[in-house]
Image (cartoon, rainbow, N blue to C red; front, side, top):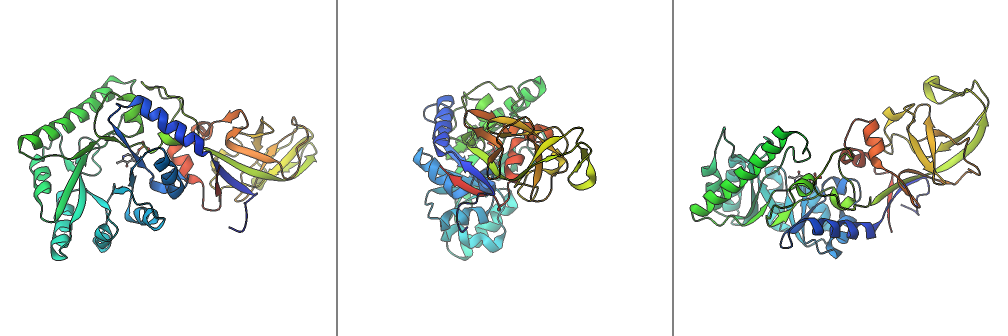
Length: 383
Ligand SMILES: *Cc1c(COP(=O)(O)O)cnc(C)c1O
């Protein structure tokens, strides 16, 4: 990037990251540590920068989705432990020992393949075992329908595989309003504990244990495994603000997404705005063109949904279809709007907060996804 992009950018408030990590620490038991999940470019916030900020807050273990993400961190000289939470194809196995990475054993077949590789090359691979207690995504099945504890035990004894930890993943820890989902999550916890107990009975030391994602932390804060795995919470947001939670920390959103105004003009009653002529001015209105569009990650489906952005701390409605690189807003009620003014798409306009949650609700999705939409064209600026 040549210089600061004054077209469309995302400001990352680093002091809010430290604040949020502190809020997480207030919820979890004092001996429990944080594994910072920074997959998907830290949900659009910038993975390397996020790791550096988390490090300052004492987070010493990171989790990513795949090898490419782990290598990005290593190339940026992040030297802490990194756990790859997902599948790694065998062509990439060599990076595991070359770059000192920890691989999740996602299935027995995968573990054997990795062990065979490690034996052949006379290297040792660090791993965490994944057990499936109800998500049915990755891991050795340890459920009432299928109890493959023998496979879990076998993983600990595979040659050239050094199992350092074990974990599972919640599927409905975000729901505390339906009894059947509370029961399901508590059942997942009980299954995970039973796995740990049966390992110990077999003389196997399970290693580092971890189970809770963000909602697992908020709704099951009493659990005392070695680590928790938040991806969202240090970003100061939850998936959906309408969901009730047990713990109610004071999280502060880390990202504020901004764009500049390129052009302001009055249009007469009867004038159409943007592609498809889906919006027609009913009276004379003042229209501002904003330098953001769906190629930046602002969802086109929000067109004509009476959704807002902030300008000078006031709400302005998006009118007409959102284009690839631009969109129009009605600023009739806002004085002194001019070319170069900043628009807040979500986040803070000084003291006024427009939550990312409003955008996510309009799109019938969760904030996790909305944050991932921001494209590479949106420069991230750390303050
Ligand atoms: C993504 C992910 C997390 C983090 O989830 P959040 O709900 O964003 O906190 C934790 N664990 C695993 C296995 C994940 O895939």
